[in-house]
Image (cartoon, rainbow, N blue to C red; front, side):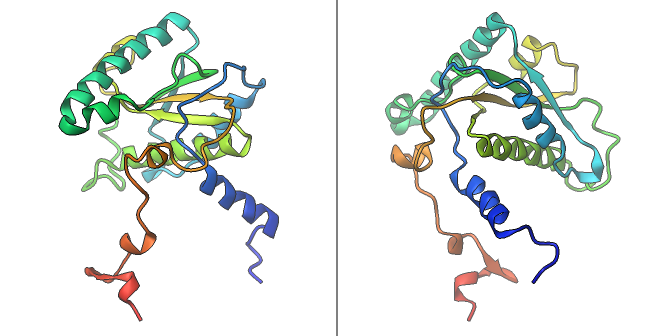
Length: 220
């Protein structure tokens, strides 16, 4: 028995949150409970970060007009993305890719400004600040799922436009517009998989032993 392991029921809860987390696009307008969003942000802030730089910043979009302007920018980028997809353009345009106007809360997640002095773990891989912030978003997502709240990560936007709308400092970088709120139900499978856009690949296709030339499935 591992003395550091959680009780079985708590272990099951962790894996259930991971397994049933979905990138949600359909929301109800029901407000979150008082303190709920703050709990999710606190969970995000407990994420690991390279060199403990904590590069994440969170902007809660409380102004409805600002929310509409963010949505307008996302819609413009949605059309540009469709045009860039060629033969799959029509399929893409049929997808619902965000719930900005419907969800209870919108949160812009960004990388901090003045990141250059942080070289611990970033000297050869400066993008580790983005990896760290992504861990924070995943923490937010799983905490929300555990409380029955949906989250959708929107990345269809012009970073410069979001930076200007949110009056972010030079050097900062928006990486996500999170739609957060109650949902009628969680998708039984990832929406893009259910819509036939793509499918989840087996773990065996993603894992290797020692070298890329040796798939883990081939390891006896």
